[in-house]
Length: 481
Image 1 (tube, one colour):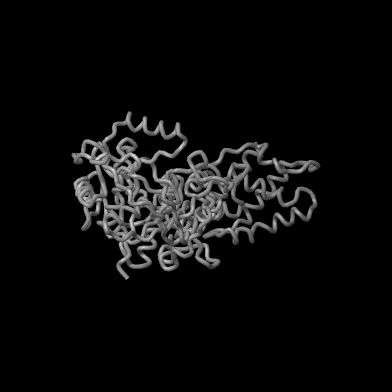
Image 2 (cartoon, one colour; image 1 turned 90 degrees about the vertical axis):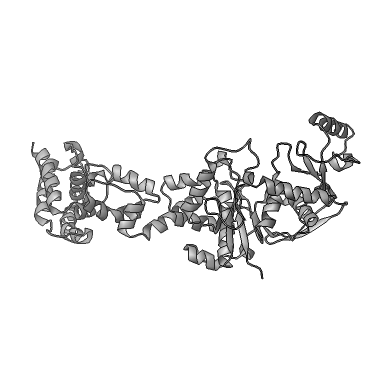
């Protein structure tokens, strides 16, 4: 078998969405699985739609995900250049070859003349086919007019798709389409075929929108005497609800927005790989080496794949939890005024945050009490005391004072603190009045100054005995004042 060569050839027309990235991922996985080559090239022949900065953005997006190309833009290779607008001479040489073989000719019509021919066909209620209006003796092509492909004699096209199986199209599928426009740039239909031939591409992963154009591609390969690559049509990515293709209005985002929101590339690659591919096992979480080992085109599904951001978040949390404490802080760009406390807070962040953006928000909100002395109010210290007690402040004072005496010293864990303090809360529960909350609420609020915070045992284990006692004494002072 020849060396497997795949490619990803995006147009620089805006952000990288999940559909394009998944195509790149599958092409890369397939090449790696078969120890082949993966090429990145840019199809920029439609200059009107080009968006400034798109090429660096494409490079950054793929690099973030770890999708490394063996040759292509910014890396070079034996088929350079890898930007179509820099390969115009190559396309002209292929065009001349087609002309010499009788497979291409100069389009003699102006836009107005073409419009009139189309209007006539419409008025006669028949499809407009350019091949019905071919010039008998076309003038030599000098590049100032479009160059058209001379469609072969009417025939039916059949081909095998690695995902969809046997496909076919009737004679209406191929007309005399444009190869090179009057501005000198090739059309997509022509340029990508030339590039795939030159770069010896063996397998093409693509979206289903290209199925209808496949007969055009096949007719060009045939005219050029070249063997077409194998095609694998990927399933459409569906918006939530599963009724239509995912688009901007449905929340489709630039892939780098997920990086900004604190998703890990490991999670995004894992998620996208399963968005239309089934490993055939119950395994859900895959490292990149595991994906390369398991990936098989035969397991790509035909039906659409639903984009489930809830599942993506869950998968991201899984990969976040696998990080070491130092990696978690570094990769999450987490900062705090006390490095020791930040490290001790990582288990809390792993337990609750599904993205690093959520983790950073937790540090500035729910967990801000770990790094700032809280401001307390008397009413909230007593907020959980139940009616019917004779002197709630006196009871709270006694409870907090006893908690200080019972607080263990030295290195603490949440479990050691809980073992030391829970007997006091259990004793209060036994009195049948305020319950455990009469002890635990004043303690948690004294430590955090928040109505919602981690449990007091975890807070004490992070704050340490000295700072914990200081905060409890502050609450006692407020009650005594």
